Amino acid sequence: MTSALPERARRGGLHRAKRRESLIALLFLVPALAFLAIFVAYPLANAGMLSFFKWDGFSPREWVGIDNFVRLAADGVFWSSLRNNVLIAVAAIVFQVGLGMVIAYWLVRVIPRFKRAAMFLYVIPVVISEICIGLLWQFVYNPYFGLLNGFLRLIGLGDLAKGWLGDKTLAMPAVLVVMNLTYLGLYILLFVAAFQDVDESVYEAASLDGAGHFRTFFGISAPMIASNVQATVLLAVVTSFKTFSLVFVMTRGGPSNATDVISTYLFKTGFGNFEAGYASAIGIAQLLITVIVGVFVLTATRPRRPKTIKEVAR
Image (cartoon, rainbow, N blue to C red; front, side, top):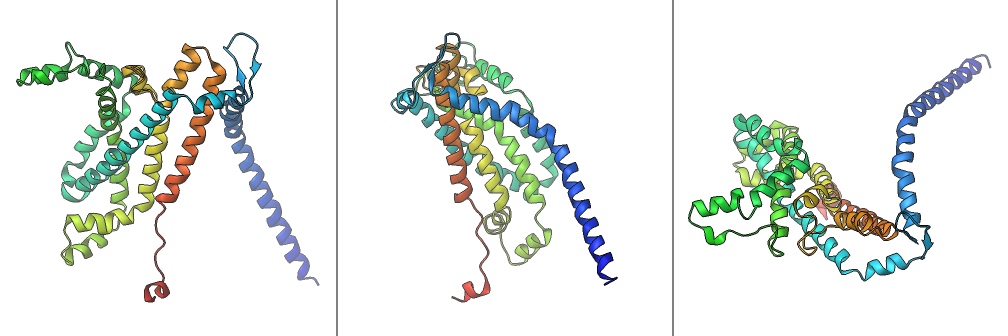
């Protein structure tokens, strides 16, 4: 009886200590939760409500129900903007994630002595403002005194000089080049860190077995950083579906909406045409599409569970 009392008191003390720690943790979370509530949850809820209204930003709101979403479903510019977002996402997966992983492996395993210098050069575009990058590339693509056309004329290929950002067929590829060059360094940096965490003994064993860089990359390195690949693919896709600055600075979505993405179309609809209700519907659609695509990416890139002995035996 006497031994049960100290044990019960000890458990009570542990319970109070855990409750105190939980309360302290909650107090530390309050500023972050308040920030999210004020600057994320409230604007999102307000945009969701506004999507059911017709409003120009000044006059009284007019309830229209789901008319904005019905209009959105038949809006050709919205679907072409979505197609551009999908194109940007596919290019990001191939060139930023895929090529970034290959370059990172090359820096870590083949030419490690040049790794720091190369990473410095690759990361420079990442730390520069997207607006500055867009303005610089406007000068590069300028049809009259741009560096690209000037270089083509210098080497005798002046017939290939184009108005790159003013041509409907060339504007989007030109923007894609800028985007991939801008963000490639970020993914190289992430993959360099991932490859460096792989145990060196694994590479030594592969070398003893006679595995070359091709087999080592696809058979050892890539599978061992599968979770990093999943995270970077998700990052690339989500970033692609919310891209705005580079496109807006370089082309404003033109010519003739050829380079519009959902964010630029939303901006022009809300602040150019003063259709705040319809712009809110576009924003809600963008959010839902991004969530759906993000869940799909997480499911499709989920690392395979290692097989058990029984499964191998079967």
